[in-house]
Image 1 (cartoon, rainbow, N blue to C red):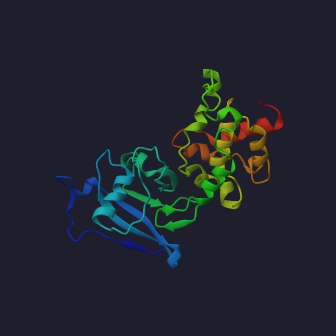
Image 2: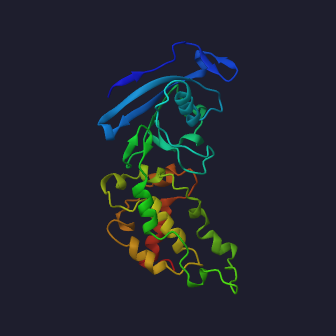
Image 3: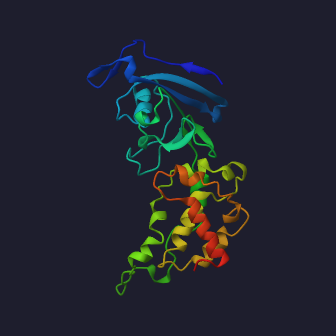
Length: 259
């Protein structure tokens, strides 16, 4: 792979209102590619000024705003809520807005697009399959009484009822779990940890009446039984959803251990 080095003409690194010394800078290596144009992956290196609170996303945006406007990256909320800025940071799937440069403890940071997703360009990947698999498991409450009418009443849940699925409702669909999943790399039809975790989220919800319907969707060779329980999906989840545990609990429903 080729390495392209890009810097400002001036060696002086400027921060907002202040001049940063070389010791306050990192080398940011950004994977550049454009499959639609037949462009293979290269790595462009940039010197970026940082502070102890600088996030990887801020470093990338510094490059985009000051050194190379053509860098493609997806981002939105900048507070780990939207899940847009997932990427590999020094080889590990993570949210760029949630990862501080100071936490990485390296003067060289390499950012690459997530594994197991088609690359659109540079750091931006295609989420069509993740979205399709998410929709496949019917991610909504299935209940004939869920329609609002003048006679409607709220669904009552106890704290114990809520605890059964609350952890799994925190998913922000960032795709990090699918990126880390070794099974996703070998089976393109695998529903994936994200979709399976959300299937469990609704199966475990006592307001939902679609358990049997969902279990039929995930009970196949590309569903819960395809998972090898590597646990990497849970390790990289920024919200503590623990998809690996959700898949095991789904298996419990299929085997009769859960009701």
